[in-house]
Length: 171
Length: 97
Image (cartoon, rainbow over all chains, first blue to last red; front, side, top):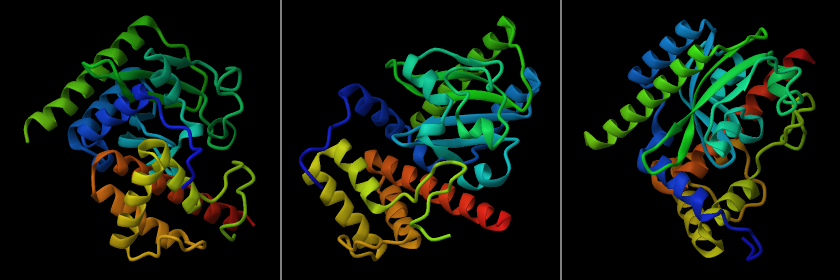
């Protein structure tokens, strides 16, 4: 392993440290998180809901609804295909009404090969100001999201973080 | 499909050991990264400097990294996701001929 490798920034190391602190690499299909993604899908009337944790090089679905095929088998995707990365980097919601037209994601293989057409993701913000990933919903048709939709998603994302913190506190 | 092949529809290559070693080095620096890699290989029953680690070997190393928790587990989970993505997409490509 050469000496020329560029180290992760202190901010990114701290963010990943939060993910490790909350033990999120070992969480899969948690029941409470499953209830939240199902509610998110129902309230926003979309078939796919995810709690996605953005790692270094991949996103990991700690809860999911409506996936199939390789996405379900991998329970995540390589990081370069993660729509959620945008919400993590900006610490703001990322919304895609028509993925085939959106400049950020229109060339993403999840759009061309897997049919993702709309997306809305709210960042999972810890008290220390780090974005762990997102609560997001996706669909196979273009879709406009109302302010009410996005406010609901933000509120449910806060529930996800509160639950993740409570898991650690309960140990 | 061999591990040397790119999955064309996704422009996705097999996640070789160097990718995980690089991720460990970005996280821990080169010396500590080597320590984590060697410990995970030992736990996974894999030779650390084997140049031809296949998917099963890498999966064992990834599992070992995950089991240790902490920041290294993030590299392990990432490696697992990237490995399963490759194998699953490769199987789909093979089915479609």
